[in-house]
Length: 148
Image 1 (spheres, rainbow, N blue to C red):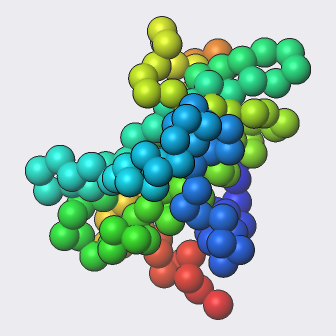
Image 2 (image 1 turned 45 degrees about the horizontal axis):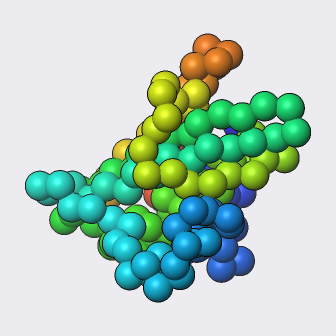
């Protein structure tokens, strides 16, 4: 699993806000990609949800990422997006050498689910791989993420 401080540090490299390279939306119309809101507000909660089909030379799988944070919970919308995209990139890198394309909805059952819950105190990340039965969860305080 990813070392959280390592993926949080990746934000400084400026990788954060682009859609997955090669996504269907990116290929069809970049203006639509730029105009699309990444964050949906559902009641008092900000939500980002993404589905991807990732392929290697040998196999393919579907990835579902869902991230949420309180709309008025001490996390700015910008930081919510940045940390969610970093988690998405980290999840893709954990899968090894893959090419991922975003899709609008799952095609059948999803193979890998990543859930992120952010609050003003920290975040919890849960990883579930249906194919292998692997599950992993970790809770991290923001004070530890930004510690010197």
